[in-house]
Amino acid sequence: MAKEVILSAKAISIRAKRRKLAEKVFVVIAFISLLAVLFTLIQLLSSVFVKGLKWLDLQFLTSPPSRFPEKTGIYPALIGSTWLIVLTIAIAVPIGVASAIFLEEYSGKSRISRSLDIIIGNLAGIPSIIYGIFGLAIFVRYLHLGRSILAGALTLSLLILPVIIISTREAIRAVPRGLREISYALGATKWQTIRYVVLPVSSRWIATSVILSIARVIGETAPLIAIGALSFIMTTPRSVFDPFTALTIQIYTWLSKPQQDFKEIAAAGIIVLLLLFGFFMAIGSAVRYRAGKFKE
Amino acid sequence: MMARLLDRKKIASLKERAIVSILAASSFLSIIVTVALTLILFTEAIIFFEKVSLKEFLTGTKWAPLFYDPSFGVLPLVAGTFLTTMIAIVIALPLGLIIAIYLSEYSNKKFRHYVKIFLEFLYSIPTIVYGYLALVVFTPFLKKYIPVEIFNAFSASVMMGVMILPIIASLSEEAFSSVPKDLREASLALGATRLDTVLKVVLPYSVSGVLASVILAVSRAIGETMIVAVAAGSTPNFTLNPFVSVQTMTAYIAQVSMGDTPFGSIEYASIYAVGFLLFVITFTLNYLSRVVFRWQKK
Image (spheres, rainbow over the protein chains, first blue to last red):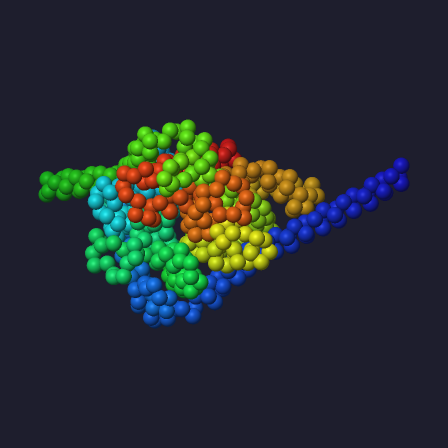
């Protein structure tokens, strides 16, 4: 009897040791997988820099595209992307913020508000290429905007609108109730409270969402391809009705060429793209961090 | 004096009402966009289905819209999409889960914070960059070991796996973190190791959250365009062989809209038929993901 107990106690301790070992093995595996993802990414990105850096010079930044690798450049694409960013933000942000204010402050928990919630959630999940062919039909064809900057910006605005609405709603929701009540107690109307209390308090969060949207607009490719922004553009656009090219589109064009040189030039384009993208992501994260979203 | 004050109040309330209607109008734009988008996809797809039967579209195994004798069976495009998505999930799911478990159960707050920023960055990298990496870096590397075509489903899928990994890792981590502390502590108090607790308490409790994250990741992978358009090729192959060139639904739409396809032609209409199918699939998946996610909340 006593012998059996001792044996099973031994067995238990062996099992406990095994379980502890299993746990240690898991932690090691988990840590290695995390590092693997990190290092793969660093490895891949560094290969972009190695390939692209030698083509990246002032000439590259200030020249139009050319069929000669040594003469080609990214200037019209840079200008095109800038136009796109400015226009898209100018269109999408006011509408998005207005919509978020309505949903958060005015519509309450009504049925309309709940269905709008679902609708906006759905819009956020639609693949970007579908926005592209929608823009192609609506803006390019029916509204006769052609394959212009305006058509591109409108298409991208629809794409980022749900994202801006959702993040702005979160920002507005985070404003403490007490602040609103102080404002009401001083006799302010609802709109005055929103205008002078809620918006200023949540402005940093809203700014974050705007900056992150800029990063998204810089990197978006598929919808622009769909509306046909792929033409070989030598000149910079003069108005919003002109055809255009963008950074991502230019990179895609280079990638589609068979010559090895153009693959490396695409890498140079990607460096420019990643620097711009990283710049806005970093600013966005910094503003959010200072706004205290992650201060637990 | 009193009258003046009242007047000002009236004006103020008029102004408020005007503002509210502007705000409401902005909100209703989302409804208009939804309706218009569905309508456009539907009406343009109808033009396509006047020429090609729904049966041929959904069951045909040959997709050759540009041939003299064109055929419009969408299955090769669906197969391409299915193939790339499945490989991406097979890569992203185990890695994503392991990272999520590590973050929620083992790592400290600071480390978790930085890893989550890194994951967010990973997810928002422009997908053309992943396309480039697949085509120019990963495929040549693969070629040293396996005979693959220049454009192949596998390279694109691996990069797509990296792209969707953050969705699974981030959302699963949130699901794990929402498991009540008592349950964990009860398990630990009984002498279970942390790993036992994860496998027998945390995972079963948050299985719906994990499932929701996977469905969402699948939906994103299906809708992703640039990685497959750049690296997976443009050959509608009815195959599940990952080492040859395939074409996904999204890549087809990109390919056709890129060229100067005349409005009103059958190829032009076909992108809306494919787009409509893509819309239905991703919409259903997103809906499912939300339903599954709600199980956990109950």
